[in-house]
Length: 287
Image (cartoon, rainbow, N blue to C red):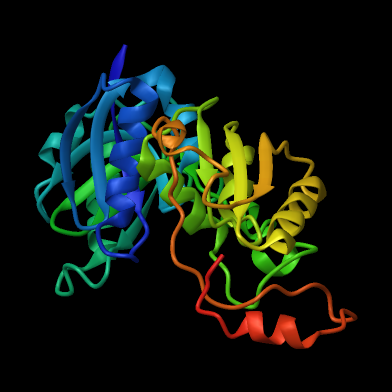
């Protein structure tokens, strides 16, 4: 059965959060989806509801997501009376996206929405069975907050937590978002030809993909292997790259979301820095 879901986006990186959500939905539904609406801070999409958990498990640039109820203008909550609310107690929580609706009293909107919903459901502000999100942006968008994304899970794999790392590296959430933008499916292949300390291949392996790491610097390849072993993640293949490492045609079926890099490799503080290591740290590279 198809259902409409709202995805509440992070307020950073321009259109990238929206594009990540839309591409991930297309990937996980094999295109069996419909974009109902998209605007500042949100995407509403219709797709088979059984695909919702797999879509959410991939996303990096969304704050929350859940069953869509309706969109209304301030003071006009009539459509909310016909919304498909499940049984149970509820509470309404609001979020004003990037200063939208500065002249609208958010608490008044919460009370008006709650008054409509309380005709069928009881209110429980402390321990509700259902949390209704009200996103204040171009309109008031109401949805059941089924999933709140835990940023701590990505922080566990941030650069400073790795045994082999660089002072300036790609944050796990950005690496994951880049992978999602390629449209690669679970079980597909992700090749990073400039793997650095392995930020992209770590996320690819964690997402259930065949991760391949390559770099002109053998130390980077070895460090990436070390990081994958640290997180108990499989590395499909790894090798220092040369002009002949991968034939031109052989990579066409692979997805490579690698980006420019800055900074050089670092290990824990007790590491001795050689002259060559210092010189490498001056290169414009980002992992």
